[in-house]
Length: 78
Image (cartoon, rainbow, N blue to C red):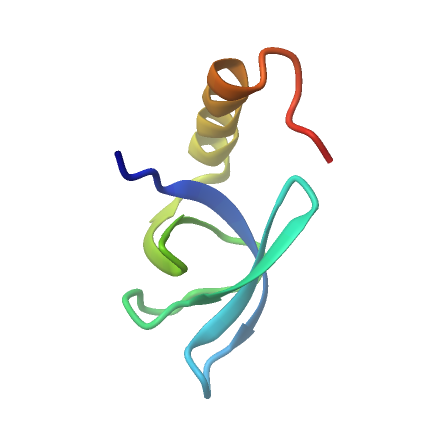
């Protein structure tokens, strides 16, 4: 099973096609080549280190709540 995870963009490096993204305190360098005009503060779905789709903040938070309920019962560990 493959899982794409919503992450918030913290910073963007257009020159290298990368961004720093975050979820619950975990930060990761991701590739943003597959999307146009990715900006700081936006949310994206990340799969295998690539941003594959932009999503709204509301959808990101809703998805994270569902993942929390499925995997962690009470809370996502920090």
